[in-house]
Amino acid sequence: MGEATAMKKVEETNKPIRFASMFEQMEETFNALARRAYEIFDGNGRTFGHDLDHWFQAERELLHPVALNIEETAEAFQVKAEVPGFSEKELEIGVESQRLTITGKRECSKEEKKGKTVCTESSSDRILRVLELPAEVEADKATATLKNGVLELTLPKVAQAQPVRIHPKAA
Image (cartoon, rainbow, N blue to C red; front, top):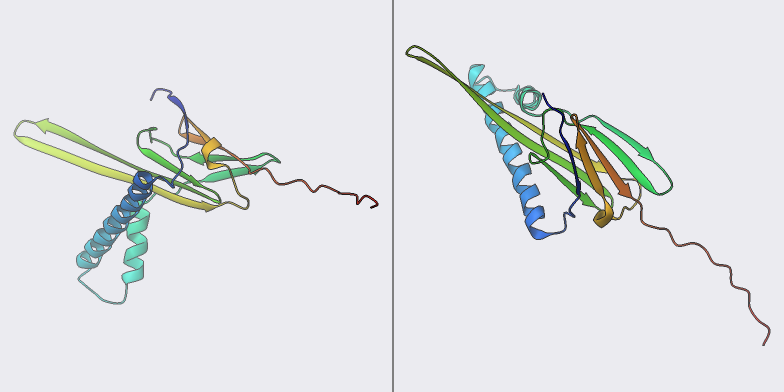
């Protein structure tokens, strides 16, 4: 697999199109989980009482964890997220004042023909990670770099007001 590097400015999620897209992607993920959980329920003889087990199994099959490493400096948060196999076009990053959202979806299909037999395999990988930040960040100054399956984000903190001491003058 070749090496790919991409760097772009992270867009704010308060734009209506991005906001709707994020919710649409979350709804699509929820619906895929519900469908898979039902398939597991149906495949197990429609036995009631195991719905939570079916849901967790569907999550394990469809959602892949996003491991994060977060470092805080005086000026910014440095976030590294493992997103192996995802390209910059398959990822969507949302930055709000105290929240980071990383979503991604990729699909691939493979078809093999051997004589009259055709075998088609399809797979879909999804990631979703929402992180509440401990301090406000300047979303419009956030940047992201994707290299070798690692997404690196720089989220500059909002500058805090410095206390000023005022000395009263004699009247």
